[in-house]
Image 1 (cartoon, rainbow, N blue to C red):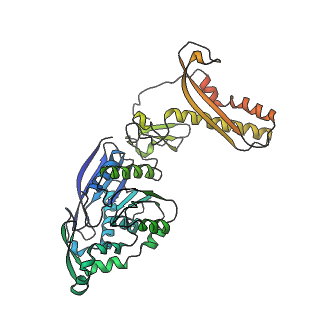
Image 2: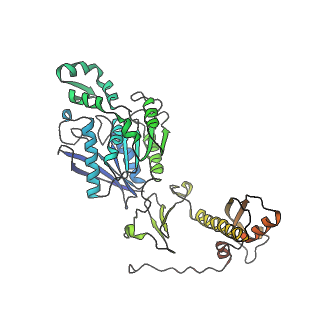
Image 3: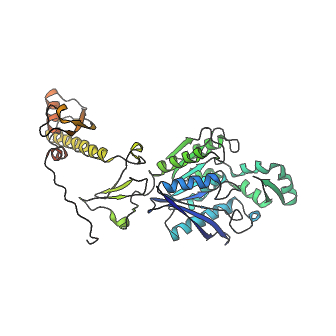
Length: 414
């Protein structure tokens, strides 16, 4: 799926203009995300740019920005600290909500991960938070300039070189990171959490991921980044992070976001099914079946993103559900001791001459194999009768009947 990237500006926590970039899919996004970069990095760091563009290509719009005093943003870095970074994140979320849509996903890399954990409670629209190589304690970053800490303590500030660039670190920055305790923020997060970390990370050790994960409540997930380095300098590591993020976040973002001009009002009325493309790959679909959200897609081997069941999977699901419900209704009427019903189905196209019970012209036909498991103390006569009843479920009958599908173009008028 194609995407586009545009430059933006918005006021940060101290009023300085912050430089931002919005990576978004060509169509309507299925969700908006906010990305926080690592300590002294910028929005254009390789990991930030690659992850954001990959998520945009999968239908998730991402706003990445330079914190105050970094990259293209205004303000003085020496006057900033961890708390001001959190305030910048809240300002970015407010900007997204005001101009586009509230961010449902918060993603933070390294110290940016700690920042999104702290900011989440102030961003009510967020439903999912993901950290990448994040420290449990923000003061962890002080090891990057440990040699200058004495000067900071005695003189109030010191010039340090980080990543080949010079920065002024002041005592207020050190005092601020030392005062932050993320335990409470993580424990009361109230959102789905994904912790991603490399066991070989030499900048922020894997024990930080353990502490974050342990402090959090469910739903929470951990994904190992295996041999990745802290900055995700290898492209395939960034792509892996984006793929995992997209799949994981799909469980928590709004299922009713629409890509058509109808917008959220496209939710189907009872007895109506509405299907609309969602921008997740070339074939991704959002389905509203009598107001109930579903997804559909094609498998990757057919060019899809495998973000939902394929059309024939949904057809089999319909047959299976109808079969199980029909058996349950019949057993209830008969007061039979039917336990759990499980229906397994497979679909294939076979040659008609290979089907001994088929009638009609030669050629390929659709064959559904249905295996029914019946639990409970049923005798053989009950089981045999229930097997007969399975063929009487309405969807089964529809598949065996003459079906008429009338198609017309939507005039746009109700």
